[in-house]
Image 1 (cartoon, rainbow, N blue to C red):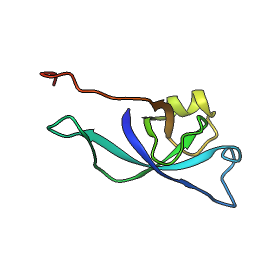
Image 2: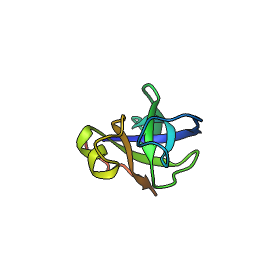
Image 3: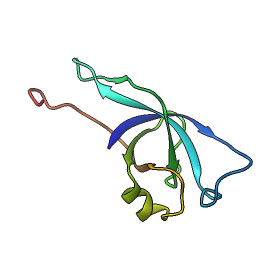
Image 4: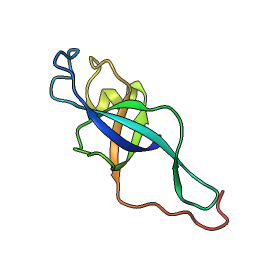
Length: 96
């Protein structure tokens, strides 16, 4: 799973079968800097969202066909799925 920040919603007039009622989000993976603050990193991804996350929200994105199959069905042509909207994060001192 990846911690990510929602950059924007995406829209397509024509969508693949199975995506008709699904929100598409561009998300940027995040990591913790040496000071414990969240910093952006990595390439943006497009994730499926049925939790109604919005721009700027911190989300947990799961990857894989098993996650997609449970939440969206086997016929959906995507593997990145928003599984949680994150309320808060913290780093425990000394944790690695």
